[in-house]
Every structure is written in structure tokens, then in C-alpha cells.
Length: 230
Image (tube, rainbow, N blue to C red; front, side):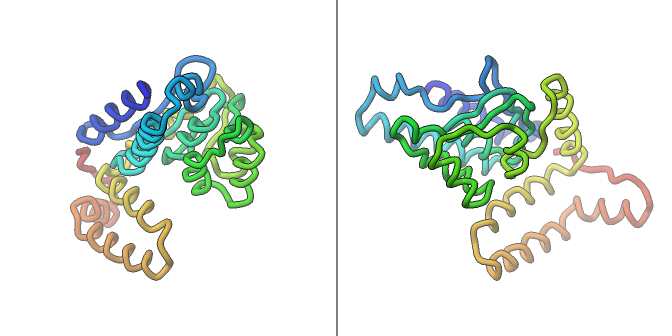
């Protein structure tokens, strides 16, 4: 609960800070995230506490999605249950070759329902069900093949790869990234006709904005665009 509060506070502060362009979520220790603290849950096994805990978790994940800045997960170790959910909830993920992933709650009598929301929106249904129903670990190479992460590198190259990906994002106009991220999550779960209607509105507004004007002008003038960094 304490970690979720801290993470929520950080995300709220970042959302209001236009100087922040890219967010990286990383971890200390051997694991990226081992999920909820089962000892804490057992010590507070009542509906009020447990419901508040999972509501808070869901709010944090939705905050990641609603954050205007792109979010990269830097995964150096195991990511289990809510930890796997956290990876899936980030926009992008770079993993060490030593990382492993699981939604292991089912092994302890607790189906990973909340992790399943994020995971099932990253990988195919059959792959999501395999993770959720078996609770077994998959390695980083499998996570890459399934689409749970974007890149897998040797541990010594993890920071460099995260920095490289962040640099690619920093080179893009902030407003366009924020617009695109919001649109992506809005359209992903509606039918195709509605998605195209929304896309038409979004790209029209985008085209009439300052970034598209600068980008198109730079292209015509054969120069690098000079983006507004705020």
C-alpha cells in the first residue's frame, strides 16, 4: 500500500510537470516487482482493506495510461503478478535477458484478475490465458516474442538501451506524443468504425496544430524541425 501511494504521488506530480518528457520506471534489488505483499494482505484480510488495495492498484495503472508522457519499464529482474501488470501497463518495456515474467497468483489460490486486464491488452488471448491459468514463468525472449516487452538486451546493456529508446522519444514533439498516446488507448477497445471516426478528429486537430505546421514546413524546406519542447 505504501509503495502504491508513493507511485501514485509521483505519477500525479509528473502529469502536472511539462518539463518531464519521458518517464522510466525502474527498481532496486533483485526483482523488478514481485507483486502485492501477501503478508500485508493476510494481516489485513478484510473487505475494506483488500478492496482499497486493489482499487489503489487499478488507479495507479490507469494513471500510467492517462499520463501524457510515454512510460518505459526498465525490467532488470523478475516481474510477477502485479509486477507483470506494471510492465504491461507501461507504454514500452525494455528487459534484461535475465528477466522473467509470470502472473503467479493462481499458484496461491488467487487468480490474477487485475494483472489480467493489462496483460490481455498486450499479448494474444491464448498467451494471456496461459500466463493467467498456469502461473508459470516465461523468460525474456518469450516475453519479447509474445509482445509483452519491446526489447531484450544483455544485463550490461540495459541502461544504454533504455536511454536509446528514451532519446528517440525526446526527439519527437511532446504534444504529438501526448496526443498519440491518448488516442491509442481510446481507440484500441472500440469498434473499427468508431476508431476511424475518432482518428479523423484527432489527426485533423493534430494537422491544424503548431507541431504539424513546423514539421511539414521543415520537410518542405529540407531542414530539421524545431519542436516546441513544452
